[in-house]
Length: 278
Image 1 (cartoon, rainbow, N blue to C red):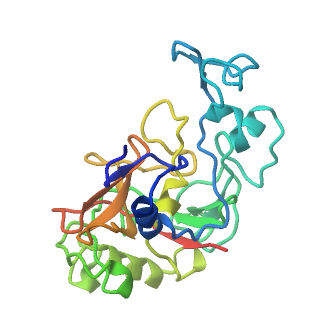
Image 2: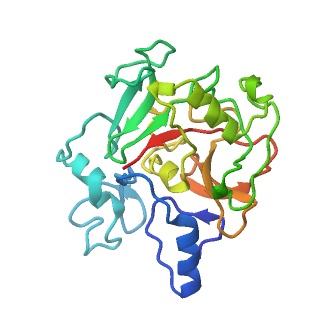
């Protein structure tokens, strides 16, 4: 049985009973993305749980470990050479790099501050476009933020305004490094030519988890570099925990799971913004 603060990433949840269904509806029903990525798992496991290639006798309906993830979905079609992509990406993922001015780029584009340099990544499966972190400046991966939102979607707990944990990059916001101020600053800068950036929901951020990664971070680093800093792999989401409004969800890219943490956690966590949807 899963704890209230830790659910496995993007696996079908099966609950019994009215109370459990009510909890699931409260915490997990908001999905803004138009599609859902596969997990990135391309490896099957034999009867001894050793990694092996999927085949008719490994991972199939009649094997010791039947119905394995790697045999189905976009990842399996990609492995078989049957998946057509708009852009690139590992396994069944399909990403396109986007410039500072908002135009699509080739996979060879590099991060930079010029109008034609790479700054964002579009997920062609979900329709969402994501901020790409840098190593310095406003969008540095080394900055952290407390969770704060004064909107009605905060679960009746706004969080905390925070302190200067983002290298004075939010000086115009009294150096209160919190999620709401960071969203406002990125929108003011018109990242990738738009000003409708927001904090992702828990389910949206989980669509980036690449479960087939051989080591952390569990994300396609070719399209999402700078995902871990020296102290944390965890990234805030906008989702308040349904059972305790003083907690908000984050995704840990060291293991691909989501957990809930106190909104007033000292120092906070990094943020990766998103925009778009259906």
